[in-house]
Amino acid sequence: MKRPELTQALYRALFEEWAERGYAAISLERVASRAQAGKAAIYRRWPSKLSFCSDAIKETAVPLVETPDCGSLQEDVQAFLVNLRRVLRHPLVRKILPDLEAERARGGEITSVLDHLAAERRARFQDLIDRAVLRGELGQTVDRDLILDTLPAPLYWRMIVRGQNASRTVLQTQASMLAAALREA
Image 1 (tube, rainbow, N blue to C red):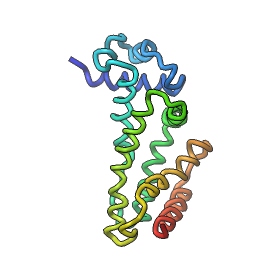
Image 2: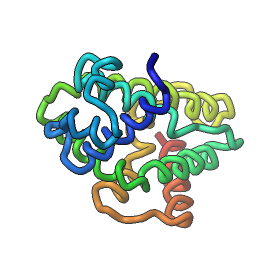
Image 3: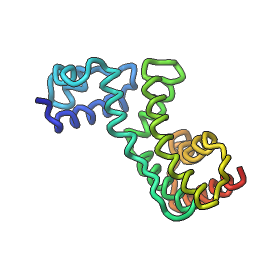
Image 4: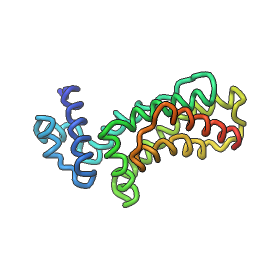
């Protein structure tokens, strides 16, 4: 029987290894050792490093950023940014995200996992756009793909690319600017 607490320990150990060494250098032996388990514990759950990483990302990344209904486009965007900031502040996330993008650029095996994850996240964020359309804040023909690209970009750029923090004031300003830009799109 697969113990859920061991699975969670393996996920934690995987992310620690990933943050230290990058995807290409992940050693399942080291991951198992970090989790105080045998390598067989990994292979009983996943047939490969890719499937292990894929499940770890899906289990932890998709539910992290919610899109609550706060009553207006600007408030929804701000809530989204507050939740995204919480995720981007995590020290492991800050190290793993650039590695994921590097793996994508190299066309590595994990690209299909990243594409699937992006599609799931984008589907979840459709609610934010749908609510704004229903409230009349955005037009019916708004470019949804462009909005989904635009929403996380300034905060991601600030925190991951530039390595800067984002205060509540910064988030309020970003939310105001994004909402205004989206209304004009």
